[in-house]
Length: 168
Image (cartoon, rainbow, N blue to C red; front, side, top):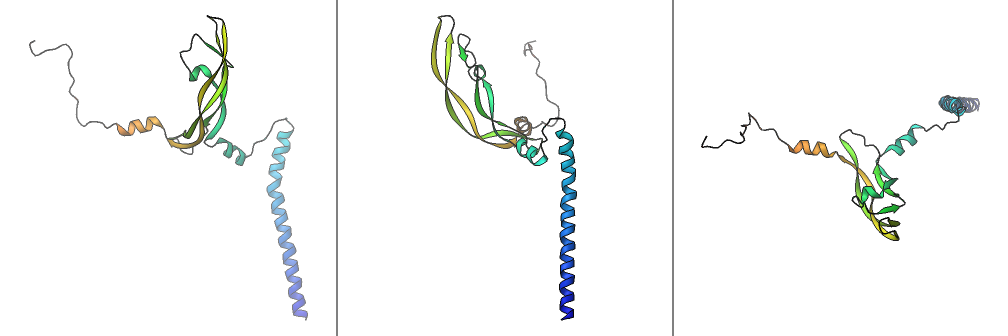
C-alpha cells in the first residue's frame, strides 16, 4: 500500500507542477500583449494584431467609391448625382511581387442615378450598369506576361533607311 500511495503522491505532485508551469507559460505569453495594449491604450489608438492585419490585407473584393465619370467617360453634357457609387472591387496584396489581385468572377449591377443635363435644364432618373468584382485571385501581373512573350533576336538587326529608293 505504501508504494501505491507514494506513486499517487508523485503523480499528484507532478500534475500540480505541470499545471503551474502551464499557467506560468500562458501568463508570460500574455504579459507582452497586455503591456503593448496598455501602452497604446493610453494614446487612444486601436491596436491591430498580426492575424487581423494579415487577413485584412489579402486579395479580396472590397467596397470602394468609384466615380461615375470614370466608368462612363465622355458624358460631358451630363452631370450624374451622386458623382460616386459604391462598388465591390478587387484590392489587397498577394504573397509574391510578380502577382497582383485580379477579379476571378464579376457581375453587373444597375444603380439608379439622377442625370442632370444643364444645357436643356432637365433632370431624370436613369439606371446605369456597373461591373462589380464578386471574387478575386492572385495572378501574374500583366507587364510580366508581356515581357515573357517577347523574345530577343540574336545578332544585329538591319536598319531600314527611310526615303531611299533603289534608283538613287
